[in-house]
Image (cartoon, rainbow, N blue to C red):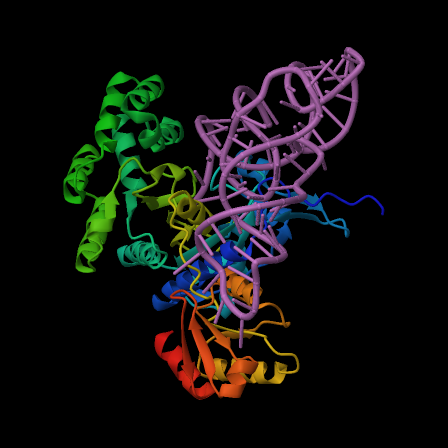
Length: 434
RNA sequence: GUGGAUGUAGCUCAGCGGUAGAGUCCCAGAAUGUGGAUCUGGUUGUCGCGGGUUCGAACCCCGUCAUCCACCCCA
């Protein structure tokens, strides 16, 4: 025997075992249904792109994290690190074949070579949805509404969408005379919930001075309801404007749609990504805020300016289902698969495989999932298999049953079995209880 | 990328210089065509990996890989 290669996967990369993959697939299905219910349509793009396409406007951080190499044809290529940049290229390339406003969703893996942590991987899936070609409160709100619907559909109704408008913040910074330090300030402000009031004040004072720090803290304070917060930031920003009007409009639509309780106006949410220009959102789980935002996004002035002269304003967000799954696991909400086979047909007598396959087919024809144990084995072992697969029923038809002309259907969870005079009756009984 | 903690049986962990352990799980049998319980017996293992020190290393030292935590950034 020669040496074997050690089986292993790269840091930050993971195999998905059936239990985990079934759950992830289920989340993807539910997300897809949610997106479509709002009229979003799916697209896909290549994993690999020219590096200049993906890195065109990337800052230092992105450049350090991207997987980049020269392919065998000498091309400088990179793996996508998000779905937004490929989407921009996609829009520029296909604009003439599409229509505006264009609402798409895109669920696919992306890669970032950064350090790992719980819920942070080097290969993970993003589920993006955007509306491009329009700059309106209705579009902004629709993204919030989809975010909320998605969280409910994914089994995380105990979460809140935190909303802010960068334009209000920028106006406020102008008034403070601190606009030139906005990047540094935004970075500190964004960490408020993490480092606390005192550290935030100290760091802001170091950047903008003590009095500005106090005003900033007053601006980003949380805890008030939406209207009170909006009133406060409007005053501190120097009065009403299109930006605060937009936040009020979004509020009206949220109230009318019955999701206002799940939408919080949070002036400390700013988002590090510098391409956001208007509303920004993050979503936190009430039970596990520390894992970070599980659905984030915002409005950008121009999606594809790198690739086309056509101006494409847009708004969108991204669900991090890998992070959400990590959160569910940490919270012990690992959820049922929901797709276990309904019926396992036991394999008890040699030469009866045709009977067993016909029985499984009959269950499937009735809309149930069914499988035949693939070899004759001790009953106990077949039960153990049925249990591992989470089957609801076992169908037992051995020589004893054949002699007596009965079909035994066993409810595996209840450990109770019933005899039926025909296969049709057994199928009917299983269908009724499935 | 920087700093810290942790890697021992499938799982949860003990052992911290002198022949690898517990619980659980798993396998076989008691038991006959029924997986929950009981009893009996049994397998658990490159002690993450590679070097070094030592008569002797799971244990001490160095490196490396992975996980977790913080920073950074973000889903």
